[in-house]
Image 1 (tube, rainbow, N blue to C red):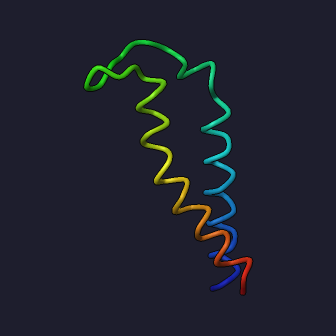
Image 2: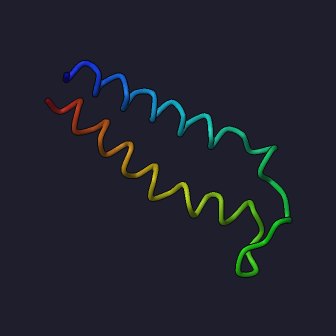
Image 3: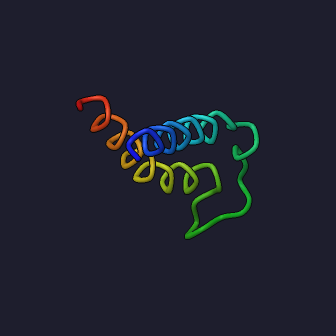
Amino acid sequence: MAGKFYVIVGILALLFIILYSLLPFYSKNDPTLLGLPLFYWYQIILMPIGALVFYAVVMIIRD
């Protein structure tokens, strides 16, 4: 069971890194949300998700 959890968290961390590295695809002014271009709200949404994923990675590494 623990081995599967490690794999899932590792895949999530890798997916998160890939999502952030797709800068040319989300570096656009349209669409906007509350007056913010896609570039800004995409990063605002990814920040808490990334914090949770990397928190899980750190908790696994500590064990």
